[in-house]
Image (tube, rainbow, N blue to C red; front, side):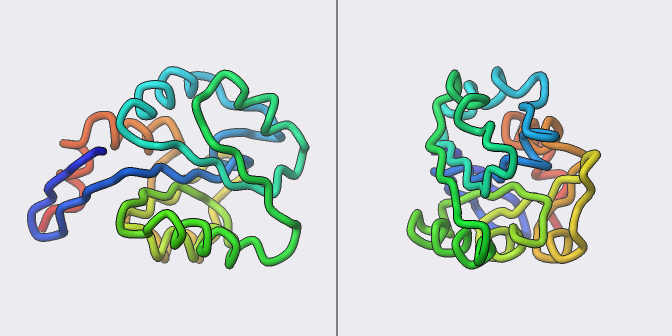
Length: 156
């Protein structure tokens, strides 16, 4: 569990990290460099889940060395499927990271929603539904690895 007390915001008691794959962890189906180490470190405190449509069919192979649960969704209704997945885990115990319109509901419902922008872009709805906007997955994961950065961003 990762506990972060953010003055004027809330105390986060996080157990699950839920991530989208394409546009967040990967570009064109290929895992971005520098993520293995970060995810390995975070998996010591959080259960890592990757929930994706797996557009390129490469998620399973890309994640084989990472301690993560992979869930591949149908091509329709992904926004609601991601929301239900997070609700099943307990949204109040989840930090969710995404960039797409289909991530907006899980970002909105999570205890902490982080929207990331990278080369694929970020849907406006994802940005509006999140608590924090980040300039990429590396920076987003680093907010969890160095929580004082997150506290500085969200405190009032």
